[in-house]
Image 1 (tube, helix red, strand yellow):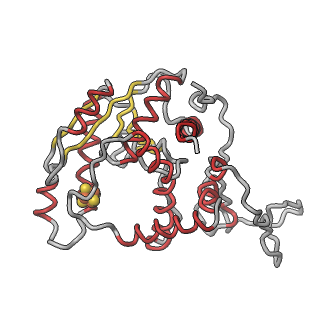
Image 2 (cartoon, rainbow, N blue to C red):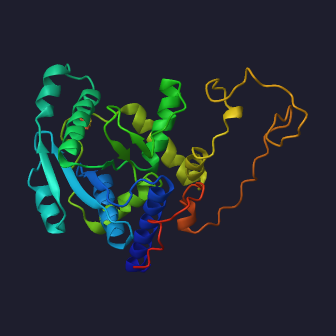
Image 3 (tube, rainbow, N blue to C red):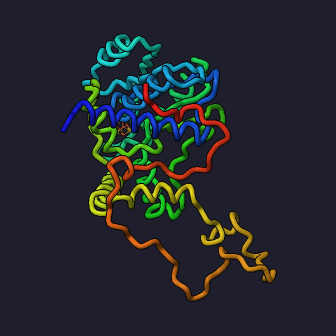
Length: 309
Ligand code: SF4
């Protein structure tokens, strides 16, 4: 196998998927100042890396500023990210706030700390974004994070709710974007190895993996391995919602349903089972397995350039 060729293909695929997501949801526009939240994990490193590549080639002019929050977790290697970011030559800001001590004081030993920790982190990042004049906050959640959240919300929250590619923050002040929304996690794992990012482990806080999230993640990985295309289709389904065939009375006016005499292929099919495409023997190239969702074509493509450069 030609490793350099495979790596180049991976880089192109990442640029294509990220560029397409940015275009589909108008995540970044001319003149934006994008604050990239860099935790030091593989996902946020990849996000910054790919956005820098797109910044060089996309016609839109936008600024990137990397922000890391040093939460004073024991053993956090405070010099790693500043050294790395200086080497990249990108504007950055390190915010130091000892949320670790607060969380340890408030949460009883053995209980999960993540919810308070992430609430504190969110508030700090919003403040930093305001101070830096950021117009967008970019987070490193990827396709598999979105699908895990969808399943967790169904199983435990009784809601059909994933993770938005772009939404106003809960305090109403910022636009939060997830440019890796189309990217499978396995690509980010490989890209982190290729690029040799200085990864900071996410276990420094001592918090255990959230068991339910881990179980759902394992389920998705198993499906992806055994049934190629299934997980990619789940993401496409999030872009292809049929409110009349769900049961949310807010989304569809079931009360007002009346027969109107006009045939409609999308009407009720009574006893007919849903016609599903026959499963095909899987012959896709590795790229096609992760083909991005079929979003409606936007009027103007800016980022989804063929990344030949
Ligand atoms: S894993 Fe640790 S750092 Fe991450 S949210 Fe949970 S408590 Fe905070």
